[in-house]
Length: 477
Image 1 (cartoon, rainbow, N blue to C red):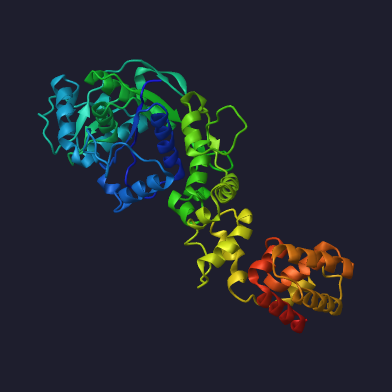
Image 2: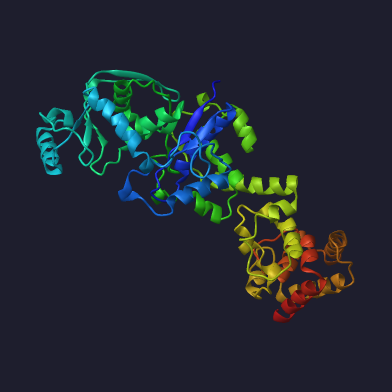
């Protein structure tokens, strides 16, 4: 495959939605796989929607995901500048080519006149096309007035790498605005100029742009540009599968997922496979595997349902994978912002992490799942008396079982193996089922709905704390 030059060209209008990020992942994978490069371009011509700090948020998100760009802000390159507001002179030069060719004209029509034309079409129940109201004897164009493309309606056919062969009639072509009154270009014009100037070979963007393709093709043709390959990405759908995913469907920004303890490996893995499959049953991919396996022809041409449950499952798998393959220290470096408030040592927290990590779905689970390792739990005897395994056992008998446990553990070496042996001997001595005895002891030391293996929990808590907690429960009962 030829070396692909791709681009991710977001608008700095707020946080990066997960759908936007997928439009960065596929260009990245395509560029890396072919030995090409990905360009980051900031399309900031819509100043009315510009959000301060949004560019930095975009860059931060891409860095977190490991999607390093080869040209663009902070990196530089031969095709800068990479902010569209800094490329005005380039757009003006290309616009003048269209004016000279008789394919663009100054538009003196007021917004009020355009609204009147639109109302007229609505009353006649016909589509509004500005070319049907094209003014005659237009003035010479100069910055400060809108510049429109002069359409020459015709049929267009083109190939989309995902959607296949496409065709449209002349009725959709119109005189679209190229340069706005503020002197900045519209997306419709700017992206065509930028992609041509930057040598982009593949345009990868959402299917919502398909309806505008005839106008884009007309501009390519008028400028004498050979257009890149088009790769239209179907929508990410709401969980119900009935519409495009939006904020109202619970979709969060990538930064929110990061702050909730989702790992970048899991997010990259999930989004890359949301609408793409290499034909195997594999579900967990490293970035290198995605680069090796990705291919445009395996992108599905229908929408993919967003499933946060699947994302969190993948995240749990990645938490375990990092711990198992790279070690607890490697996972621990990711957890700094997710522990309960504590002055515990790093060594102690690593010991807690070592026995709890395989139960985590996100790193933020640490705050709720490990509290009892760092602070005395509030005694709630109802959790014992109403437990499904213990509620048929009289309180006096429960108290006796705990006293027997305290006596046994007091004479036990405090390591996982010796503790497990002691617990097994207690089962034999008391005649209780593991679900009964172990639930009682687990609740006695943690008052948590679940915990790691009991012998490991006791080992990490320590002998003095474990026995003291059990004694407090005996007193409460």
